[in-house]
Amino acid sequence: MSIPVLLFASYADAFGARRLEVPLEAPCQVADLVRVIRTLPGGDRLPAAPLVAVNRTWVREDTAVQTGDEVALIPPVAGG
Amino acid sequence: MTVPESGVLHVAIVTAPIDVGALLSRVQAPGVGAVSLFLGTVRDLNDGRPVSGMEYESYEPMAESELRAIAEESCGRMAGLRLVVVHRVGSLAIGEASVAIVAAHAHRAQAMDAAREVIESLKQRVPIWKREHYLSGEREWIDPTKVRA
Image 1 (cartoon, helix red, strand yellow):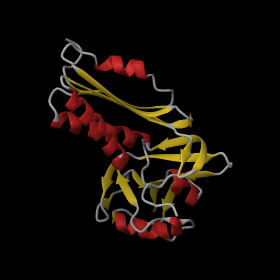
Image 2 (cartoon, rainbow over the protein chains, first blue to last red; image 1 turned 135 degrees about the horizontal axis):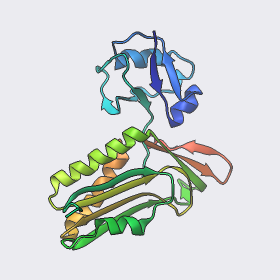
Image 3 (cartoon, chains in turn yellow, cyan; image 1 turned 45 degrees about the vertical axis):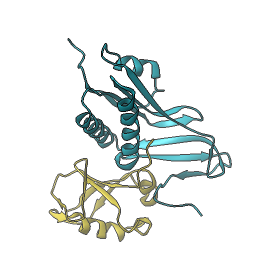
């Protein structure tokens, strides 16, 4: 089992991919997911508390991730 | 009556150049006495480094829904406000508009406050990123949370 995670901009560069398959079983917490992502190649370039969205909504570390959720790791935003 | 008296009239993430005239015409209504337009444009210098262009990327479905949420929050706080918000993504040249916010109201204070409020929120919570291309040939994603040395 794995959880797909979308990457953008500087994070896509850091991991060399626009999508990760994180080896973890859902349900889990966002914090668990981030902890595993940090161990993947490129994960050392993440900030201390990266922003995460689940189903296109901002979430906190203790939010649960379910099978089929759309999870995205969001670099510091810089629109405008 | 097909055009609403107030509210969020148009929100979009686009790749084509922003047609400001078309956006301004969207907010026109008999009760409008003030139209405030904010444009964010690509400048040729950032932190002392000469910039040759800018590349924008978005998490499009979420960027659009966050933009809409911001616009709806402003309209919820301010009765009679008419809002249009468009952000462009892709490669932009110096001087081109990356974002346009048009706020219309019966009175100028509300129109100007709303345009400012929307751009400030947009910068805080809409998943859009920009990479500066420098004359030196280097490219760098902008991270507003970092202060450059």
